[in-house]
Structures are given as C-alpha cells and as structure tokens.
Image 1: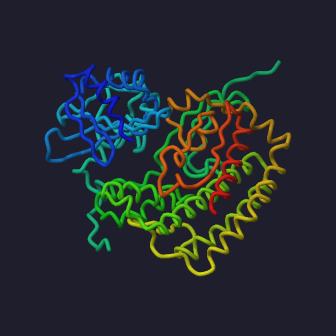
Image 2: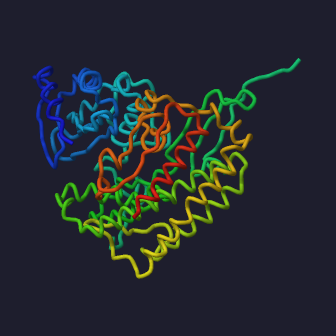
Image 3: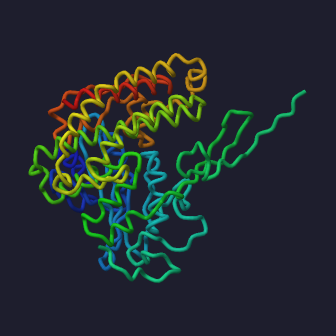
Length: 160
Length: 274
C-alpha cells in the first residue's frame, strides 16, 4: 500500500536529506542521506506511525559507487501501510548510525548486517557477529566472497 | 542454612528441547532463569548466498528448507515476491490461487501441530505429542499425493502451482478437515484445564503489545501479545480477501490463554476452506 502522505511529510521536514523517491509495483522507496537516518527514523516512527521495522538489510552492488545500500522496510500496523527507506553506504566508510534506539528489533538486524556484509553501525549497544563464529574472518554475503567458502575449490559440476 | 548461588549453564546447540539448533547460555537461580543469552547461527545454511547463483525457479526448493515445518508457506512467500516483481500477480489462474490457499492453510495446521506437540512434550504431556503427529500424518499424506514429497514439497511455483490436484484429493482434504475440530477439542481437554500445564505456563514469558511491536514479533506471537493483526486479513494475497475467517486475538494473555488463542486460530483456518 502506497503512503504518499507520509512521504510528503518527510520531504517537507527533511527536504535536503531526501535524495530520491521511487514508486514501483505499488510500493514507495525513499533514498535518504546516511547522516540523518536516526532523525528520519524517529520522525517516521513518531509522526507517521511506522512502529514496526520488518527488516533491515544490506545490499552489495559490487562494481557500483556507492557499493552498499542499507534498506529499512517499515510497516505501520494501524494504517497497514508499508514504506522502504534506503541509505547509500560507501565501501571506504562503511558505517551507519544505529537505529536500535528507535526500533529495538534493529539490534539483531544490524548485527547480521555487520556480520554478513561488513557494514558497521556506530553507537550500537552490542555489535558483534551473530550468525558466523565469533572468530570468523571476512563477511560472507559480500559479492566478492566465494560461495564455497574460503578454503575449498569451487563447485565444478552442473547446477541443473 | 541453605547456601545458594547462581549457576551458569550451557543449553548447547544439540538439546532435545531446543528443537533445532539453538544455544542458550542460562543464568539460573534454582529453576528460575534469570538471564538467557542466545547464540544463533547454527542453522544458517547460506540460502541468500546460494540464491545469488541460481535462477528464480531454482530457488524454490531452497525455500522449502527455510522453515521445514511449513514448506509450502515458504514457497508461497518467495513466489509471491517474484510475481510482484514480474508484475503478474493478477494473472495467476484462480484455481491455482485457491489451491495455494488450501495448501497454505494445511501447512499452517501442520506447523502449528508441531508447535503445540513439542511444547506439550517439553512440559511432559507426551500424549498430546503423539495425537498431534497422528493428525500430521494425514496432512503429510496429502502433501505426498500433491507434490511427491512428504516435507520438501517444491509445489508452489512462480505463476501458479506445479500441477493440478490429483483425483480424489479434494474429498480427502474435506474428510480430514471435518475431523479436526474434534481433535482440537481433544487437545484442549488434555491441556487447558490441566493444573500442571497451568502452573508451568501462566505468567511465564508474558510480552506486552508495545514490546512485541518494538522487538519485531509477527504472526501468532504478535496476535497473542494482544495486537490485532493478521497478514491474511490486513495485506491479503492469493484471494484471501474473498474468504470469511476470524482472527483471534485477546488482550495481554499469559501463555496458557496464548495457547488457546493459537489453537482457536487454527480452528478458524478450517472453516475458510469451503
């Protein structure tokens, strides 16, 4: 469900931070500036009612600048509307402010993003690996990390 | 004079009660858990990474194995996303949509039966476990007739389902559904009024509605924390808006009534399959 009203409110309040708005298949995606994500998240939660963070994930666009995107999928339980916020993250400065103060569930999602993608979150209460072993090296979900793992030869057979 | 101290115990990844690999470091005072630190990742099989090297249809069998108690639901979730991206969500055949709904509800029953069975088993009520797995066998037979496999069905595909229901399956499903309300009464009879069950579950692990939303609970756990929310009603897919069903949710329930609410929510899934 499209929530044009909230996006207008967002653009009115944070006009310089809202970089792009895309509507595709009835869903709105707003790209915002990395530096103001906490303010924007708090605004969306308090003023626009997006109290449920469905998912927070990182995307690796290897070969593009900026290399990473952090995607926040938000849901408004009362009005049943969805919104997607994206934040571009450089490879050299792969760091975003944590939103775990806004939505508690972001704590583990950001840990997963750090573990698998290598995007760190500043002011995070407990940023450590969540899925991989604590002493693992590397960030497995990055596109340049081998599928078969660091210590094996690639699979030589057919996939189908 | 009793000497007491807190104990830190490892409830290791392999444990009969963790039902799948989950490690909990428990700080105990007697039998009361003061703090539980979960260590997860043992069941992480790299589905996202594998999916990057497969075509859209090749990923469907991978989704079967995500929540292996509800394989067709996983298929459905993934397939709906792909269909939305392709823009063909409104061109799925109506019969395929109805089959999807039937299979999704049977899968829901399948998964919830395991939930309650293992919950009761951990508390000590072993009969419930056996009774529910007996019901589950009926659903597994339906799975096998429809898709060829008892668990990893790979049945719901992009654009519809693999093939139509075999002859006679509709009658089998109707017969099974007709027997379910009596079975649910059986489980209620074994558990709800049971003093041991009540002592083990009332007041244990209560989560408030605000907390549930903040920590990102969804599905039956969110409903039983008192939030009136059901994805089938609030963001309908596969034609759910044309079905008539109740969503059970009550205010601030302790787990015992939480269980009843979930049981009742399963009975609602039955009448909707008209």
